[in-house]
Image (cartoon, rainbow, N blue to C red; front, side, top):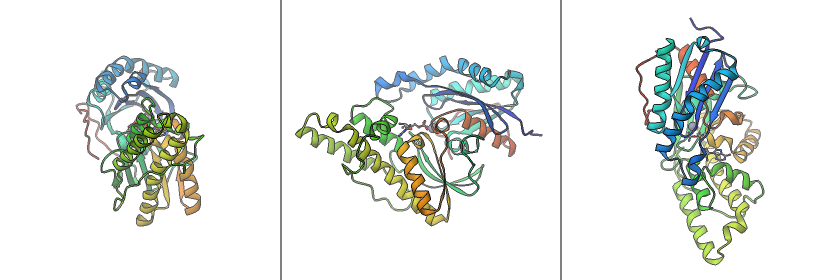
Length: 340
Ligand code: KG4
Ligand code: ZN
C-alpha cells in the first residue's frame, strides 16, 4: 500500500553533481547539490576526478538532505537512485551507496533513468505553477542529450526526435571554450549574452529532415568564423564577447524552437515543457514563452533548481515508478548507456 505522504530519498551522481533529496508526497523537503569546480580548469568533466569527488561528497550530501528535511533515517520509505545514463565511475558511487543503504535500512530500491527524471521534475509540487497534463511535448536539453519526447503518462514516453551528433549543451560548452570561457560555458554564454546583440553575427544552421537535430555543423561554423576574424583582429573575441555570445545563443535556441514548432504541428500537441540543464537558459525560457503566447500553446518552464542535475527529480521519478508497480530491485547495477 502506498500512502500519499510516502517519503523517498533520491540520489543523483551521473556526471559531476552529487545530489540527495527528500520527497514527501509530491513535495520536496530538501534538495542538496554539491557541484565540482575542479573540472573548470580542464575544460570539461574529468571522469576519474568526478568519481573521487562523488566519494567525498556522497555521505555529507545525504546527511545534509536529511537534516534540512527534518527527518531521520527510519522515516525513509524508499530509495531511488540514478541507474544511468552517465559516467560509469560517477554512477557507481551513487548506485553503490543507494544499494548498501537500502539493504542496511531494509527499504525498497528503485532505479531511475536520468533523462526521464529530468522530464518528471515537472511533477514536483513547486516546480511550476501548474504541472503539465498528458499528453505533452518535452524538449529535453542537457550536456549529453537533445530530444523531443512525447509524454503520454509518467511511465510512457516516446522519443520523436533527437540529435544525430552533439547535444545542444555540448555545443554551448564547446562554443564557450572557443571564446576562452571555462567549463561549463553554457551559463556564461547566457550571462554575457544579456548585453549582446543576438542578430549581429550569423552562423550556418543545419538542414536536418524530420524532428532530429544536429549541432556539429554550427560548431564548425563558429570555429571557422572566429579563426578568420582573429586573423584580421587578434582581439576580436574580447572586443565582441557579448555580441558573440548573444548570436551563438540565438542560433542554438532557434534550432531548438524550429523543431519544437514542427513537432507540435505534426503531433497535434498543445503543451510544451522543457527539461535538462540547458532549460535553465534565460533566452530559451523567454523565447519559448513568447512562442507559446503566439501559438496559443501552454508552456511549462521548471524552476532553475530542477533544470540542472538534481536528486529531487530522481526522488519524484522513484515515487511514480513505485506507485505504478515498478519492482524494487536490490541487486540492480548502474548502466552508463542505459536505454530509453
Ligand atoms: O542536465 P545537466 O545539468 O547535466 C547533464 O545531464 O548533462 O546539463 C548540463 C548542461 C551543460 O552543457 C551546461 O553548459 C548547460 O547544461 N547549461 C546551460 C545553462 N545552464 C546549464 N546552457 C545554457 N545556458 C544556461 N543557463
Ligand atoms: Zn542531466
